[in-house]
Length: 504
Image 1 (cartoon, rainbow, N blue to C red):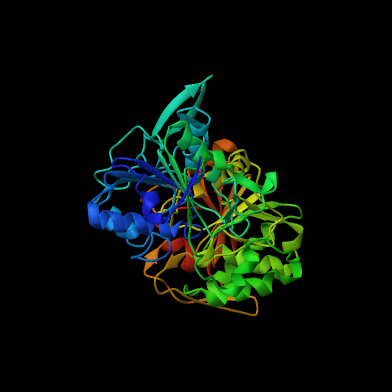
Image 2: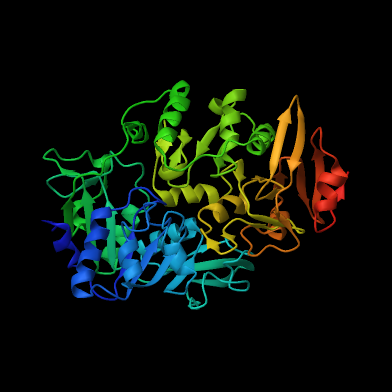
């Protein structure tokens, strides 16, 4: 039977050495009051300590001082297993300083491993991750020098087929953020942008005789409608009521509490963008890439569009009129609306459906998308892509590995080089005014997020769209198949590549 407690009381349920699983997504829906209560207790008692933290998509709030950052920095955590570290601003720096063990697994594989644990299985099988960095025959999931635990990913063979087997430590504490709890302790997520892995996390923790702690905005007297109660009260140990943090008024569009017609998506998106502290790039290169990439869309396509450079695709899809003829998806579980970017990435404007994250990755892993548009840090001569690890920086693979593993058409959107690149576009012609100092096409990528060899085996169509031309993946490597008007193929492309490519 659940008890209503303060955050400080609830955190006493956590013991030294616990494995805490957090239900959040990059920078949204983190139970902030619970995290800050852990820090208060750690400051006073030096406990809980020796913690392991698990999260499919990370648990930051775009601040170096708030949420879990403080107690991670103070030394309460020995090990972190995450799909994405992007919103964990101080943590991702400490990872590269070997302050604690840190492991990066594909987001969907963590989600499926949590669900497997909830059903009494030790792990989850997947073809996602074969031949990329997480494959133990390559680098394995450890990010830094001290992350040498090889138990999280292993190669297995079943009926002559290779799979990766993803296994997590036993989850013993759940930290969840919901909207409301009724008098039976049933938890709804009505004002949340997603429910993520919430139910699976709770089921796994209870199966391991652990503690489920849920932060909600309010208590309600009226029982929840059965289909709206994501977490049944029988799985909850502690309920913490915390005043919800203020959100910009425009963010109400992300909760699904009212219908947003297609013709209003853009207006709401602009309102949300205006509240973000992250500045958006609106350069000519992005426009050129977006304008070309959108030509790959077909009516009725089911689509995923990554953050960064690929976001230009959705803008041009709206301009060409195809946006309302395709179905966009986002990793956190949303389908059929317009994904937002920046600090609220993971939320969706006008979603038709938002379901559990593990179900979304069932769709992705099984080739349910028709096409995806992804960014890239580096591309090498074989067509391999590094999208998770830059020089001296680490964001993590996120859902990239799942999304690109089996989608029939994969489109990478990237500039030819970076750091100082200046491009102009006028009357259909592209002009390279200044080359960037860092090439994105390299002889060998630093780390493999996307395996060209595996894509060829799968029969996937793979394009690399830049601001000056388009490459296609072939069994022999890259082929330059298109050069834009105004671009000299020899001077602007072929002479600058550190390797040879086929050209027409």
